[in-house]
Image 1 (cartoon, rainbow, N blue to C red):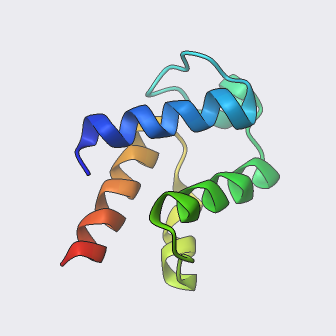
Image 2 (image 1 turned 135 degrees about the horizontal axis):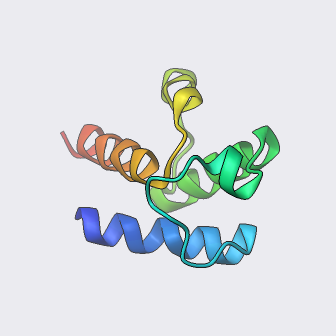
Length: 85
């Protein structure tokens, strides 16, 4: 997966699941869009569907400090690299 592909997928998830169109990639999701812990769980579920596999507990814990879409894209890219290695 390329970073551009991941970004397109993540932005699609935000549009479909959270009705957030054209979000700022470096905006704090909590402050700008009232993105809460329930939304974060839904997002992790969507990421699992992207990989067609359940995330490990460690992978989920690493997501706890994510605040921006750019961080989400980096996180998914890291997951993808780890799964193909």
